[in-house]
Image 1 (cartoon, rainbow, N blue to C red):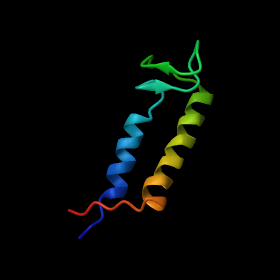
Image 2 (tube, helix red, strand yellow):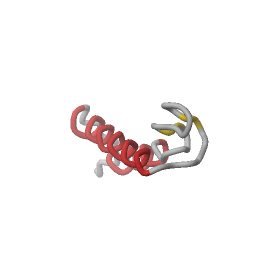
Image 3 (tube, one colour):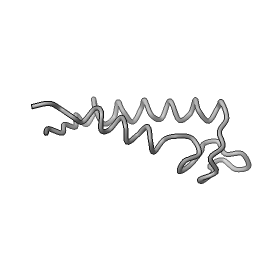
Length: 68
């Protein structure tokens, strides 16, 4: 059996943490902007760090497995 947790979690986090899709930190006018579809370099960096931290949390710390 193959463990599908890594690709499923990585794809979902990549989609949900795309800067500007659901939220953006930091926003253009406020600290958090919602659904504005605009981005900046600092916003991309923050979302990249969040993506990596969430991947480590789900795959290493919580040790989630999905078998098909």
